Amino acid sequence: MEAQTSHLWDYVPVLVMAFVALGFVVTTMFLSHWLGPKRKTKVKQEAFECGIESVGNARSPFSIKYFLVAILFVLFDVEVIFMYPWAVNFRELGVFGLLEMFAFMGLMIVGLIYIIRRGALNWEK
Image (cartoon, rainbow, N blue to C red; front, side, top):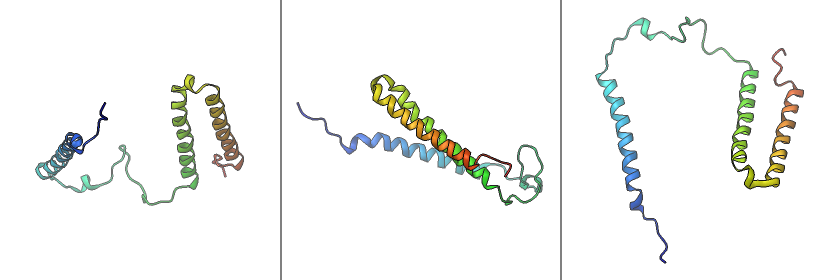
């Protein structure tokens, strides 16, 4: 039997599709900008968010607690992403996979306890 080899010509349809999609996006963006109405008024140039009038400077500093909670959310959200493949392959991984997941979850719980003890989630400080 002869081993099947991959040639660059096999990828030409994918490249053509990518160029067509990119061309469509660029063309529609250009045409909508070029052919679209241009009625700039003072009211249209104002910032608008959720129907609430803008008050103050948008560059006011945020509390570091906001960013800390956001980073912690991403960290523990990634934990769930790692649990999904384990749950799908639970039977194939067997007892070793279960012990590995217990170790992983244990490390995450230790990290959560550390975060709570350090007061990272305490907003009153």
